[in-house]
Image (tube, rainbow, N blue to C red; front, side):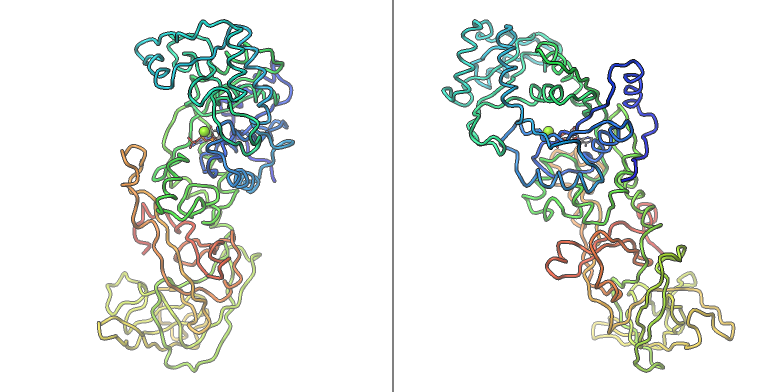
Length: 555
Ligand code: ATP
Ligand code: MG
């Protein structure tokens, strides 16, 4: 992959430049530490582009480390999807794949080190009492009655925890720091808890599992991470990060830096909430094209380059903010406008019969891109029965309506001029056929007698076009910030998916997933990978031609 364009001088790169200039480190080493409890989303992409991008820019390393300290939530299918999405985004991790669980033996030893130094103790308050003793933001906590038990007793009890002699919730290991600290995380945080659960990497070897805060900093140090980059909500935890590393005997000394989490309007980023959308059947899975997941965006037609470009455009800050969804959309639109082959599709078909033309297939040559001849041409069949979009015909219309009107002419894109002569309606009054005539002299040429024909509409030949379902997507939520609403489910947009039964050019029978086309005058679309597996032609709208929030009606 080409080098990711540098995030011009963001504050993290400034820190790294200083560290290099002052010889605080020689080789930059970052890591991306996903918890395997969901699929990667666009927020993760921000962290991935930052961590892997820095490793690329500075010729350093970036590890992929699965944070699997909590065996309840982890799942092998998430591990596989994360690896796949990361590679698809265009990044490669350094060396082997790491797991926090790789260090369970060492973490256990470091826990002992703290116990032996009198810096950790086995607490036997229950979880409710622990919460009560912790105090609040405005009142200090109080010491557990077990806080001052002897080192020897702590060693015995911790071994018992590890041996499975104590029940879940009856004991935990806590750091002995300061129950009156203004930082809640420093009020004797829990380091280890008992869980009789099989772990996907370590099986039944352990019944005690380290907490994230304990495992994370030590894993960073063991891997030689120089800059541990995480989101702002871990700012306070940095104190604990430093406290643990300062109090154990470990060679490497990574530093943690925080950046703002990505929030996007009209969607959510929490994996727990995204999972709720799936379990409540609001979407069809993690890769539903409406999801902000990498797999959803891919299925919808977003490219890896457009996602990387988005991360570059939003940059890196220390203030949390809401990024507009249109920013993401404009990244893919800009790319597709340049690269997407053009084609025609009729989403809401109405039949046109050309009366003065016999039925005979005729192949018309059309450019795949109006401004890029290198993209070549294609042959599109034309015949006397075609479909146009229902919205492109009116019995009567005002002057500014530049499409087909009864008694008037319009140009068929890359084909002939037709004139609407008369119509046929069904019993309910719906127009079912528009009978037209065509001017055989107007193939890509103006009429010979100087008649002016203004409008151009798209079409497909009825007998040759491929029937396809077209999925039109809109925001998943009706409100810009669903996180602010008590029950975010109530803000789901019922029209986030609209299905049209239409027709596409026959060439699209060979469409492959991840190849996005511009359906002329309609938007950008790609074939759906999942439906294709089932032999069905479904096209997903990647993005509209323009920002529909500014231009409600494309005409
Ligand atoms: P959740 O709260 O949904 O579980 P998380 O932050 O716990 O999210 P992880 O899988 O643990 O998710 O995240 C892996 C890495 O990706 C972390 O370093 C985290 O900071 C980063 N990350 C996750 N979400 C975002 C986001 N919205 N913006 C930027 N970085 C993110
Ligand atoms: Mg997490």
